[in-house]
Amino acid sequence: MAEPYLKELRSIVQRVAALQDEADGIACKHFFSGAAAYVDGHIFMSLTPVGLALKLTQEARDALLAKGAKPLQYFPKAPVKKDYIVLPIQLRNDKYLSDWILRSIEFVRD
Image 1 (tube, one colour):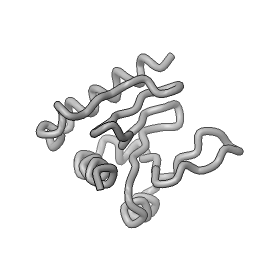
Image 2 (cartoon, helix red, strand yellow):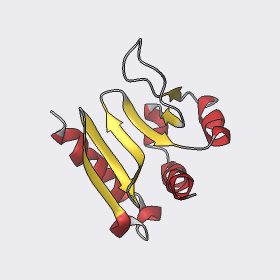
Image 3 (cartoon, one colour):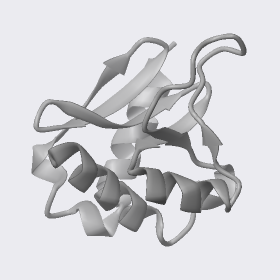
Image 4 (cartoon, helix red, strand yellow):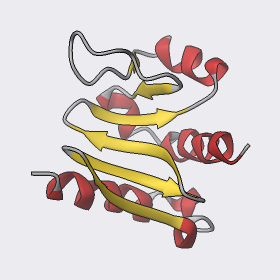
């Protein structure tokens, strides 16, 4: 069931032009019912049935919340995952997606 998510996440990493310098250091692996992207051993992005989530600073999460993003919560009564935000569909295809992904990579490296 997670295979389509892994394939799509790898596709996102490959097609986002700004990630080309980072691509060799990014590993995409199965993650529960989806997939996660790792850099330096840390998850910075995941794709699950809940959506595409990025690990970001509070400031970046607030900016995305204003654009329709939602906090990451895997189940209705589950706790919200700190530092993660789920991008709405319109931002997943946005030309600025690479900028948000690069911010996420920077955040996990700090």
